[in-house]
Image 1 (tube, rainbow, N blue to C red):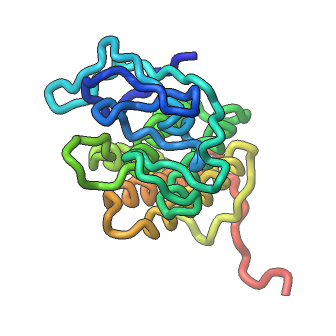
Image 2 (cartoon, rainbow, N blue to C red; image 1 turned 180 degrees about the vertical axis):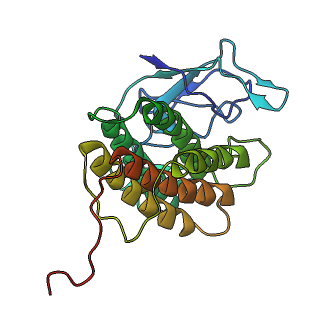
Image 3 (spheres, helix red, strand yellow; image 1 turned 30 degrees about the vertical axis):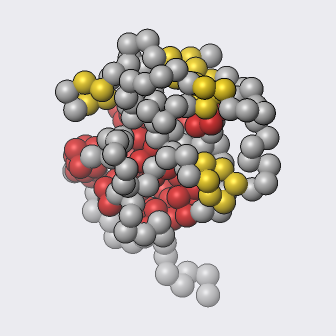
Length: 250
């Protein structure tokens, strides 16, 4: 199976080598990219992934989209002791803050996948969420690789967050002003978007917990995304949304 992520950190280097004691192919020091591991969830571990050198090179400060990720074995037993690798191949516990953060980003992405299947989701929302799903792999890749070292890595950029802000403004301009807090629910699409929103908030909190070494744009992106998901949930309810009535059942 071959998948083509939009952006993966890549530099030309020697072909992947086979790690002793395992059939999984490891990436060489020059070829490794920031691909989140399965312990957090967004892709098989970087130690399970081989990259086709084909047409992939670092070009003019941007990532070439021609790279192919070839998934070899899906299990290697290398994580059975409760540890895994970050994107820079440092070995950490599966409870490491970065693993918790990008694992929750992966959980969010899975919930977005469900949202894309439910009835009543406007076509424009579906197109936007598909873009967000791809961007969340960028978020996971960024979170998986600590800063430092002598290589450029895939990092979330301000323009990705700005795109979310533009969508927020576009949809919010069509909605009536709120007079109370919104209860999660309404249409199936709105209810699922609220699930996505709450998972996104948790991912944001866990990203903050990674500390100052994390790219601050990751936190900003997740913060704006949770806002967008709230606004889209309101839009999916078409103005008929359940509202909080304080103390109603006391």
